[in-house]
Amino acid sequence: NLGEKIVDEYFEGQKYIIYKPITNAPHLIDRLYVKDKKQLIFADVKTKAKRNKYPDTGFNHKHYEEYKMLQEMGLMVWIFFVDEAEGTVYGNTLEELSKECIIQHNGKTIKYPWIWGEIIYFHRDIMDVIHLLSEGEVEEIKSYNTRKYEYENCR
Image (cartoon, rainbow, N blue to C red):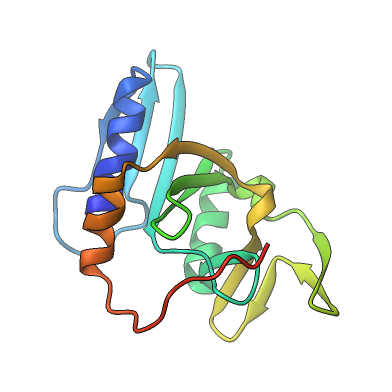
């Protein structure tokens, strides 16, 4: 909820109207942002830091397939990551995240999007920073996590 609140505040500042689910049950997207009754952004917000050993982040592949269904209907789908390790909120459209990207990392060739188990990963460099987290926001997000290790910069 905290990550969604942070992204909501950003879009409110950009003069968007925010629509969100009112039931506390599984839902396809977290938000619909609308500007001037013309621009629609279907958004899902992930409050999670990048991975520690790779320059990427990701989420459940099943959800990716659900978002792709919306994209195939012609809707603009954005995925936002609220990352306390980097102190930023970043993201991009599903269309951009889905584009193939090949990188070298620690002697390995990695092709993104990278599906590993049930998770699909996206290279961090293809995402745009939309907001810098305040020190208070970073500390509040950290207070909710249960990690037993610190993050390293792997870029």
